[in-house]
Image (cartoon, rainbow, N blue to C red; front, side, top):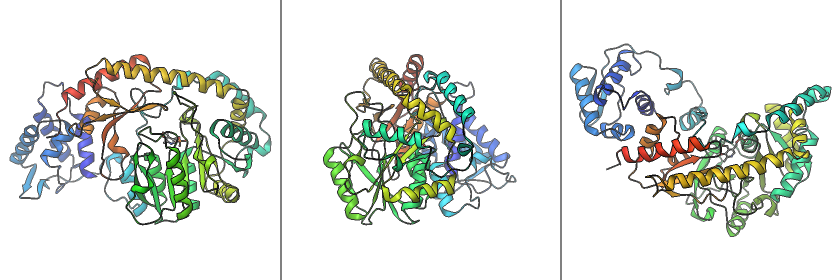
Length: 487
Ligand SMILES: Cc1ncc(COP(=O)(O)O)c(C=O)c1O
């Protein structure tokens, strides 16, 4: 991890268009960090080949910088062991965001921090998972919020433990039954502060630390965080063109939880086939596992009706269904929901109220009216059209650029595409080079728990307007040509 912060810091500070040559800049940046004590004595620097590859530099550039700093006494090399910082300068505390040395965290906490770090919260081309927030009907929503805040009864303003406001649970139960084929009564719906909290709650209530959880590979980093944070052992399950494949798991341990995105696999975009759904349900029944079904963006399906949820197919109540308002409204609302089997209603309500307290009932009342008055459905329809159009634009713009050969995921649904890259292209260097122009190309490798088997870039388009798509594609096409390939 220490190596990674050095690489990230250098990648941020190197100026490719500066008159100062790259080797000189690298020397200066390393010298400054050694003098300030940020790079403490005995710190091992990344191997020259690795640093060159990560930064998209020639290896000779890195060797030149390392050799000069050795000559100046800042670095020394130990035969066969690598290049190290000489202990000439007192060490200083690292900036908080770069502190990767032990902090007194629990083993579980350190593993969580090391694997996921701080989220970036980026917007614009091509930040994945961000909806078109400016076109949300803010005036209508603010009006509803203000009225429901004004009219809130004292019961709504006190501590509550009903699993959320009844009117909202009723509205959501009807919505998921009609539009997603979920079998449920309003009592089974529990309002959460989004899917992240729903997964955390489910992991705490249904699994013990050390239990095994299966996750799609590649998969959703938010699920990695929630399940790792609950102390579970994460087992990656390969995704093929029918979705998560239980038959491909070689780990003999039975899972306690299985996290999946069957409607639209995150991030590859595969829809889980019916035979695979049945096989997964049969596997869960046999092994006594709970399935966590994350139905995060099924509203945005472009080619046909959305497929019914897995929960609706299950006979024996082993599926916990999770939905969110983050994609259809906006992430900052922090509102999502769970549909749990009858036997779990009380434990989930109790844990939710005891661990987190319920969210604002006045906001939930506003949302219930937003849904029942038809504003929600109207907004979803508008956004579906807009996102379809933006995806089309992204494909067309790419097709007319020098990146025309990129293989894109099918895009039948959702808010992003995955562009496959050949293994010789350095995802990380491409991403770093584009970030200098405020273009966010998330390497597919970030979605893997184990060694990545595919290379690619995740390209969010939902919250990206025409102009930003043009700029983003031009940048992507240019960095693909400029950044050196792996050997
Ligand atoms: C796969 C997946 N599930 C769920 C979510 C939404 O999470 P939350 O409701 O916590 O905002 C996202 C958002 O990026 C996602 O990509």
